[in-house]
Length: 69
Image (cartoon, rainbow, N blue to C red; front, side, top):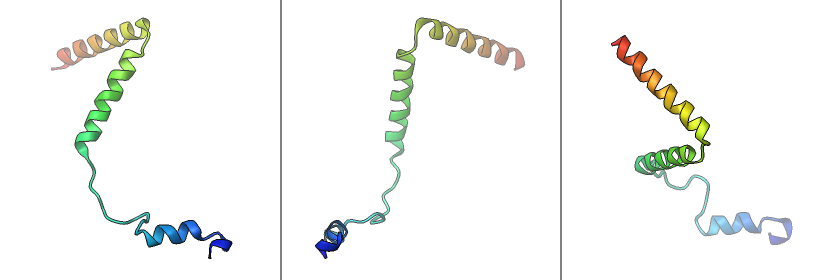
């Protein structure tokens, strides 16, 4: 059936490949590491003005939280 364009489809079935073979679990550790890595990268890429604004917002939030409790 190669002449009808089914070579790729037939080859993947013969090799046991497929879209829903197996049910692998989620790797939560890798997800957490990726989250931390992406966050650190975003903070490192910020210009100094944005870092200063971020620090002010975090400190103001902590102050508001302290007053609320």
